Image 1: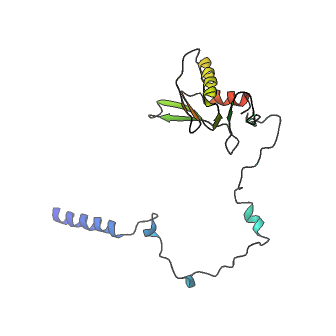
Image 2: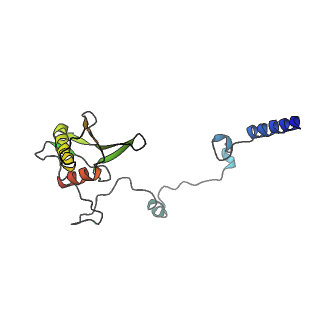
Length: 172
């Protein structure tokens, strides 16, 4: 009985390795056929029907936001254009958002708030942000790290909302 079970197991394992993989790599796809096997296609560069296809394609650039006094989401357009007296500038992303992010490490145990796209005097911005965070922590010190080459400031803790609102209030 044990010998027949071994033989059946061996045949089963061989059948697994000899069947083509399904829904995976190039091994399961059909081989390329000669061009004569494919249907003829006429390439038309500017037909009137192209307008129906164009509306389905994503736009090549993000459109400028429509100017309103207030927005329902709380979003604010950037007011500062880089020539302010503070000596630094935080550029918006291509989607017009404030570049403040939360990085979680060690299974969510360590949280880092990252401010990116900083131009100018990054140390002055770090002092300003650190003072804002320390006020929110009731005077407790917070650890920060500055990367001058990439224009990023790391602040230990989750202060994304606080820093976004502060940067929006300054016009960035």
